[in-house]
Length: 452
Image (cartoon, rainbow, N blue to C red; front, side, top):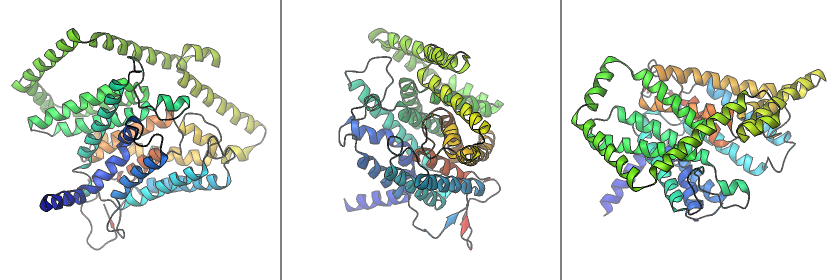
């Protein structure tokens, strides 16, 4: 027994950074399932904080004196943004209260700074072989927990956006946050597809395929249109960059081989059973209609040039509200320029001044041109690396990091506040590994404090 415990502890120590960081980034669905789904700690911030801090501290580097090479400009811009945010939080946060809980915000900023240090002390060699696998497992467990909760929930009906309700009394708590589960599902889909492409063992291939199917189902149930959009972008880029004569031959050979034919008949049998013995046909039609309707409403809200009230009637409420808020922001900037109020244009209206539901424009409103310049420049630098990596990937780990960052970029236009720790830790993680690993060796330099 002691031998097995010792073996388990050795494995945990060997893979602790991959396990800790993958849970830190993708374990939120599991946390909310344990917290609110199973009612272990309903609506407990302390429970969430304990698992969040515990997961990232699991990845704390043992050799804390060693700092690895980062994307220097990207990391400096992350530090600059954090300094601006902390300064504004301390001296320029006019709307303390509903938007700003200073103690919570201070913890968020501390977590962001801690992640900067941990990421800089983590070598790519400790992540590149196992991070994707742990990420896929955690995303699948999170997706299955949501499916379990939904199918056990008597109040859930087909067509509702799937999420685990928070244990609060307000409307937002009762609805939950489907975007959390959708993003985790998207990241799991990316991990599963990337692991599948180099896997030769039949059992593992079927496992990866099954995982991707489950996560795509979760994604459809959550109806998070921004993540559905980025999922389509992922499949487009992935298959465009994978097309060559050899890959086409391999796909055709596998499709018309015994594995492909066997999988085809199993899939046909499963679909026939579901169609004849369940209400799957009704569910499929309803979901298709809902997704089509939501896309049409969002497009209407983005293209309608009528008044805000008519947009709200014709389009998606959240999208139309976002468009209205952004329009009002630029009107406000024009008015301030006309009045000669350049200080609020340059330095903004203050930390958490007004909720716009678009982080990039929220930055312009709250932190002014200075914060907006740092935010947008950082994204441009990282996106250049992302598309280089997509077109010419180095490893599965770096390619996975690039594709996951696309979801963060889309969400930085469509939802939330720019100060979220989940958003910034994802950006910092990309800034740490956004390097040209074809020119920089992956091994540590023996007599230097910097290594890849």
